[in-house]
Length: 135
Image (cartoon, rainbow, N blue to C red):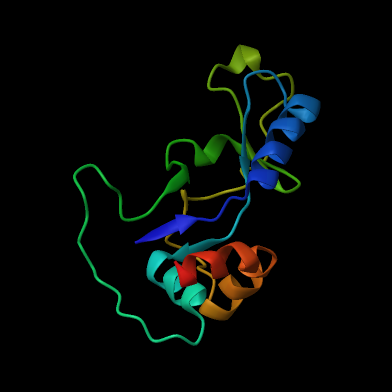
């Protein structure tokens, strides 16, 4: 199971970027790393040897997240640290179609971070993580 790792700061930045530079009808999607959930757990455990219990998938839960679908990828342009999904209706597009930024869906199943990279990403939150380790 994989998930995108989106911090609150990055989420807020995405909203501000969309307000300041999105074209009519566009949806902004942040380019963020993804990771296997089991690797996130291992990164949070550090050197501690703790059991990981696999409980299976819950009803309706997805194995991987998809931020840009197969259908939307051909209407997606690069917008710096974001993908901008252009409006479906041609009359809302203020510029001619650009070369698509993606050729397939943008999914958390691809290019996952290693345990070490996840640890580096979580480093600013180590104090909070330590509180959970001792609880």
